[in-house]
Amino acid sequence: MATETNPRGPVSPSPAAGVLFDKVVKRFGDNTVLRELDFEISPGERVTLIGPSGSGKTTILRLLMTLEQPDGGVIWVNGDSLSHMDRGGRLVPADERHRRGVRKKIGMVFQQFNLFPNMKVLRNLTEAPVHVLGLSRDEAEERARRLLDMVGLADRIDAHPAHLSGGQQQRVAIARALAMEPEVLLLDEVTSALDPELVAGVQNLLRDIARESDLTMLCVTHEMGFARDISDRVLMFDQGQVVEEGPPDKIFNDPAEQRTRDFLQAILNA
Ligand SMILES: Nc1ncnc2c1ncn2[C@@H]1O[C@H](COP(=O)(O)OP(=O)(O)OP(=O)(O)O)[C@@H](O)[C@H]1O
Ligand SMILES: [Mg+2]
Image (cartoon, rainbow, N blue to C red; front, side):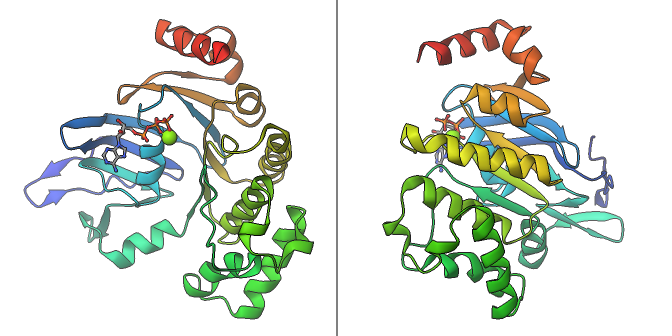
């Protein structure tokens, strides 16, 4: 969807729900990581991004979290732009209040967990709901207890992150993301820092969440079995562009592009 320009500035294209990257450009110095990237995720859809190291997968997720700003194009999340806001039918640069409002719709789980190390598990889950969503402590704690129960860690509510295994920390991180009741959940190689015996527990939890919720999910993973289980669609991404996309069976069993075949072969041999 092109954002038209007129003498008064870009006109709001009023996009539908879901996630939309409209000609998004991202550069780091003279390294252009995203080249007018277009892609769309429907509400409730589960999309997995695959592609070589350094191709820009994490950058896509960080842009959605507003941890990075695009150098061009517009990113839309359920009808709102991350970088622009509507002023009487015209798009003007977003202010911090608008950005915070859109960011609240998105949760992210990182490869390295990124829990607050100085806070107990409970506080890791209640901090943002209290300070960002304005929940009372009691409401936030009730929500936290329910989620810790769901991820199987109700008995570790008073633990410090350093006293948990990697798998437990990642399950807390997933619960922390869900405590914000996001509309979109971003997962960046969430099992790749785990010891092999802890991977299945975290993957099973995410499979359950995918099955039982209507969250829109964007997942970066090298675990093809996991990608196959949770995704409706797989995007092969390289050199700033989507190389090809399709249902997991098609991409993993019968990819059309040589670059996808080479990438999958390299992963199998890794
Ligand atoms: N903050 C930054 N400053 C400078 N360059 C960066 C920054 N973040 C990412 N890059 C560069 O952008 C490119 C894409 O990085 P990104 O982390 O998005 O790749 P990736 O696809 O997630 O790779 P991996 O599979 O290894 O995680 C790389 O060339 C990286 O060096
Ligand atoms: Mg990455």
